[in-house]
Length: 246
Image (tube, helix red, strand yellow):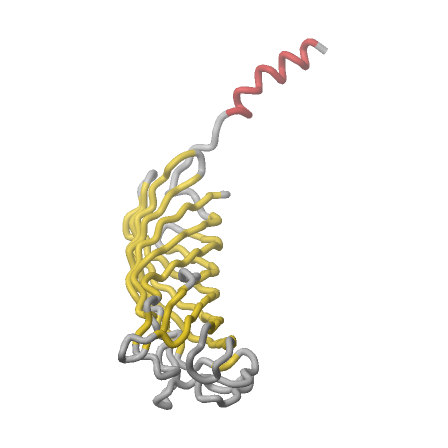
């Protein structure tokens, strides 16, 4: 019995040896990224739908969370992920040309995009990696606008919901650094092209600013008759982490 005990004790250091983290040898990881950048969406979710000419608020930044997994070789990496686009909720006051307040609008936007990315690893060392990436995805968005304190038609609080889909693409320059244990951290600087130009009503509206009813599935138009568009294109900076499994 003592012989077995001392035999196991003697082997224990071999079991306790930590895995050596080497980016040149790792091949599969899960990841989580957060990106931030200026947004071209501005007041596109609600401008041009009434006599209002000014709004006290707009979307200034694109805020995106992304998670998924990555498979890498010495030269290329494949990234399969899901992006969640969630700009800050806008609470704005609409005014006319004379500055009179017409109503309040609260605009809440949520976007989701499955994506695939190809990374070209042009420098890979044991502790860091430099890469160029290109990605594509198919995004969907839901916009919920709530209108209150109306002094114009329809003179009653109401809500409108828009939905839409669009293709997205972009690219980035990235730097990955082995941080601790089997975790690496990432910094990316890139550009995303994402424009929703075929929005439809997500649910029926009894009366909008023109006192007209809208049915779910109808195309969302601005006052001038053109399609409402939401543009989330722009440059971004992303910070993230990868947890290498093997």
